[in-house]
Each structure stands twice: as C-alpha cells, then as structure tokens.
Image 1: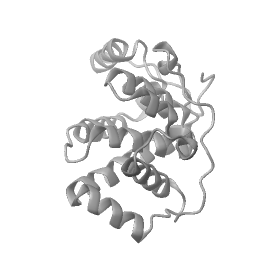
Image 2: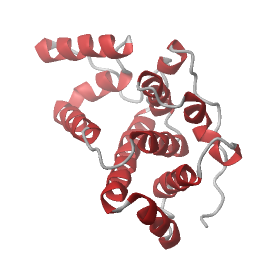
Image 3: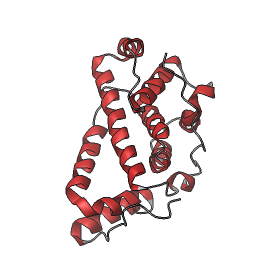
Length: 196
C-alpha cells in the first residue's frame, strides 16, 4: 500500500472532479492515487483517459493476450499500482485468474500456451531499456497473430509502459484493489534471461 507519492495529491474538485470520484468509487471502491496526483495537470490526465478509452475499443488482438502482456510489462517495470489494478480488472473481466497470477513468474509456470509465452516474452522485451525485441520473436508473433493484432498488441504494451513508468516515477504504489477481490499480486517477477 502506498504511503506517499512524490508529488502530493491535489484536491479533486468541481463538477468534473465529483463525477470522476463517483465513477472511481463505483468501479473500484475507492479513488485511485494517480487521479489525485494527475489532477495537478488536467490536460495530461484527460489525454491519458482519452487514450485509455480508445485503446479499450481495439479488437484485433485477443483481450486475454493483451491482459497478460499488460501484466508482464508492468511487472517488468515494477509498477505495483498497475499490477494491483491489473489483477482487479482481470478478476472483473473474467480472465483466467490462475494465469493472471502467474504472469510475474511466467517463466517458471506451466500454465501458459506457446503463443502466450511468446506474447509475454514480447511484452518484457518491449519493456526493457533499450528494448530487446528480436526479428525471430516478431516473425513468430506476426505469423500467429497477423499484422493488425501485432500492431495492436505492440501499441497496448507501449501504453502499459507509459502508465507504469509514469506511476513508478511519481511514487504511486499499490492501493489494495486486487486484495479486495482476494487476488493480491505475486511478490516478485522472475528474472529475465537474455532474449532468444
């Protein structure tokens, strides 16, 4: 659970603020910390919301694959808030919770298909600095998913990186969303070997 952020949360005010708080409480049971922090710069907050809403409408790539990729990327970056919220969303969206919980340690797990393993590898490779995506991995995914789904998956992971890196840099940590539904995040991700 977070104790303090690097930028103090602003008081969320006004009609728009009241709507956001009400919507957050209805969907999550509480107001997420990033909302208070980002309230300092509403155009950035609004742009993030807008991109998130648009991205949720993308439908060329399987939603489960995108969820696993999201969890892998944010786990790799170390965003406890994103993992916490990701598990909560996985629970609410009917994702395979056994697999969702195994994502941070997917290399040691036997629950993932070969395609899911390629997606998880791709998400981690995109999330390293510098990225370590290989031609071979890209070719395998392109063959299995097709170009539209591959582009969508890549953009989905990039958006996860934006959110996760922002939260980590601002000191935003887990708030207990996943614990509220009995699905606390795994403690530690597995180490990432060099890309094959």
